[in-house]
Image (cartoon, rainbow, N blue to C red; front, top):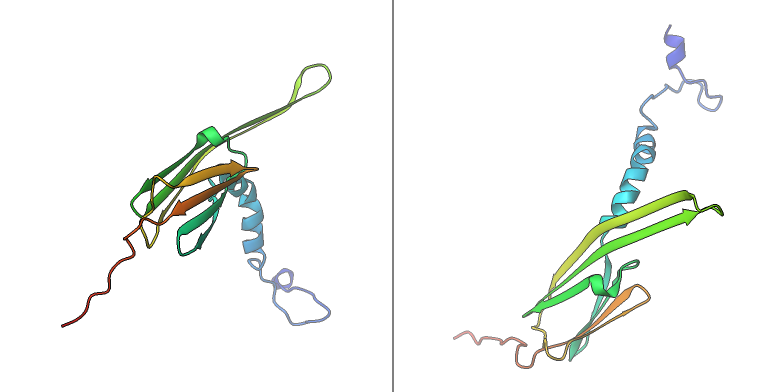
Length: 150
């Protein structure tokens, strides 16, 4: 009866059968479709932030979003980006019947606190090929101050 629990491997003749050895892979494959759908609609936008003496340069990857569905707000040194994904694809056969219909909806949101305040008047935003580009000049006189200890 215990024979069916022993794994017969010619390389390791005394190895024991472990029924849970592939459980992690099984669970990953089992939940992969649900995780993929969640990542598409509510995935994190990928962001790169660079700093120069005068400004912060921010690049956010937000593919599949209309530029009218992106909002950027600046409040002192806090920059917030929100984007709403509304994507519908319908594939029809030659007779006009729907063969496949896919919809993706979701909200993406990121917020950053920068070291220096941003000059809201001089800030600029562009959206090209699924990439949001922000040029955020630093506000004059907000570089902080080092206190002398007496």
